[in-house]
Image (cartoon, rainbow over all chains, first blue to last red; front, side):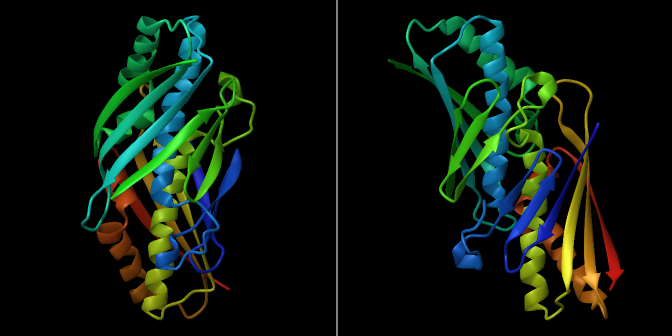
Length: 139
Length: 139
């Protein structure tokens, strides 16, 4: 399967990315000429990772009948100091909110996403040390 | 330097990513339960790549006094068939629009981004074969 996107220049450091399912504005940090009108390219990598594994979790918890009231996924990443700067350490925190958690199923869902289904996580393992953590918040 | 983003569940396969510089909605394809309300996670990886190298090009062409009327960057990527699906081949097409192109400087700018500055491209080389191409459109 082939994916395709196109990015168009909108002047200075502002760009618009056009994909079949929607557009997104991308802009640089203000200290390097951006105007704060769009997302930073590197942060989009982390959004991609969180979104990919989040969809697995939503789908797997439903299939496993282990629904939670809510969940969030945080991604923290360390950017190297030298050019080209890249993320060498990435930590993914799965935060589940609710009560009477089916923790065995939740752990299984997270592991299935991390090890088998999440293609973006597989890509990240190509350049970063990826660690994960699960937190439960009783409500 | 540490980057951080958080993704929150908005029901079904819809998620909102929150970063300091802006939010983005992420949704699955309709065939796997999405509602077409947001971008696909994997496509965001390609947007990140195009945006990163695009900013280098805008900045370098200005510094080199080799401005063009316009430019676009296309990214085409092949997704593997097996789970976890990832991009194994990625082709980046730099499209420059204008006249009297300073082609030696343009090639130099592209090469500097590809080889030295674009951290996202460095990350992509960790999991994909990345190829590039330059096209000129006389206007």
